[in-house]
Image (cartoon, rainbow, N blue to C red; front, side, top):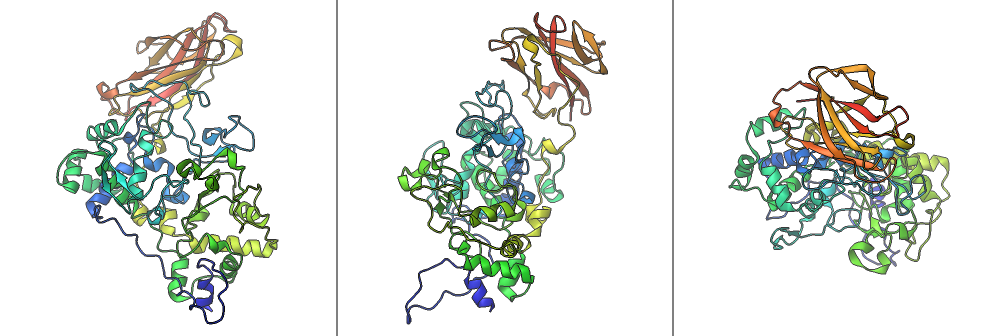
Length: 552
């Protein structure tokens, strides 16, 4: 019986005539992935990759690490992706929020220039931009021959500085690493290239912004610089894009969910409940395994399944230019899928029950290349329950869920209470529009380029940024605006210039500050923007909320 059930997970083939070839052998438990010969995995390289993967200094604004969008506890995806949350919503192809093509995805960085100042972005303003697709999983990604939903990271690692092929095959992970750090939405500033990224890392203290580093990783780093770590791993201290990609890929090859109840079942025939077992059998009988095949539960192909109209996101077509690839996306692994909500590349389904319902109704849209396997299934509620049960515990490696073993990680700066916090109420300006404070970056004394911004003021008006060592929690009236600063001897006021933009609510500005001279960990600074605005309802000034910056 076990052999029969396991065979159901194998790719579906046409019915063979009597006397045809024998059926394929039963599946085996998942084994570790194979690294390319030119990037062998070593413990030190994995440690270097783990440090780089979780270091927010890899991004221009020091807000985003590779790991920011890829928590193993969230199935290798982004726990910040929450349906209906504006901070993780991309308005989709129509550019309008609150319409059916909205995508629930990942907050990236505020659009910024080379000097750290913010640039107004048409859709997101001075808010963190949100990616146009939900973050794919890093848990088990090491097995896939192509990375990203559209497969644009292929098998070769090409040096972004020289254009030379470094690894010709089996290097999809390495190739993938080279994308996000120069993306102006995900991690980079306008015009950033890999020379900038490598130079930033070479000058950064490893994981300087992290409030908590695992003991084993901290012991390996041992207060050394990144060049020293690169020297141990690669033989010389040079920090290069290729070496960064190799190290991060080596770490990602350890994020493999090989200890699931399914693996126990494949090895012993034991470990599934009756309901989970029923779901396992249905998974094969309903042809789910035609795409989610093998012990990884994916065949790495690209399919259009009628999730959204093809024209909204062309998917694989953007890479190949082949008309049949319009709207096709990569079939994801289902290992640890229960931790990965919301689902699909659009992040539009909140639960696995929603996903099962989608397949039960045969998809939501049609197209000339819609996969013929997507047909109404007419499932009973009992069958749906069984499928959901199989997709849950049997496919989940608890080490990833609990972030233990190879999935243990450094904490991010955003998980620390010392990140800037806003308080108070903004005072409206012209047209009754209140400006708002933009304070998103970590106030670490190692940060040479902390950016503080204002958005929503009246365009062209002069702006002042005030900072104080103490606060007035109930506020003080200043020319019709409420100041939440003590206005005592510790007050500093910086004339920042006129807001860029025209009209009520359209003005914005930002300024950068080098915190390295404030070597006082624990110092609390309170800041607030004021706008000289004759049209403000309360008088002469409009003001943002205040922000608390606790240096560390």
